[in-house]
Length: 165
Image (cartoon, helix red, strand yellow):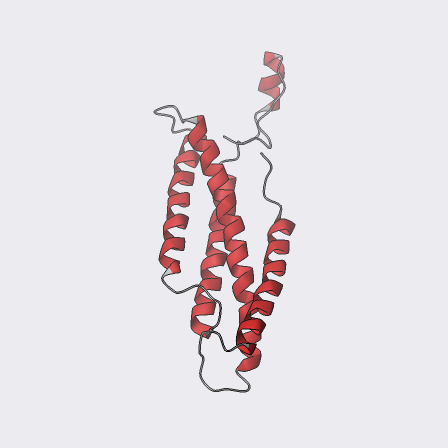
């Protein structure tokens, strides 16, 4: 598996911000409500983030030497995939709501009241938290580099750097 590239996350956020801005433009022109996720979505996002973090802490504990019982390699791989999916989904949610925020800020000049602004800001914060947790848990799953001197004495190469648990 490859590590998440920050430019992919940024590209996803920028593209979905443009789509969110266009989506909000279309809905505003047609008299439809603002296309943002309801605040109850934060509960689901929090559950996913906490679940990802708990699994990541379990992998990190094993990686750092508390190996009372064997770590299931499938669990470690699924934790890594979940962490990456969490980061990508957070980037998508953050980008979409950023596009809506840009359009809503312009509309504040023409109409009083905040409207959907607090919910949009909350969803942006939730998306950003998902990205951070995804990136942190991905680092938890990374194996530390092995000692090259010990590896040379055994006649093998160090293979820990860049690999996942």
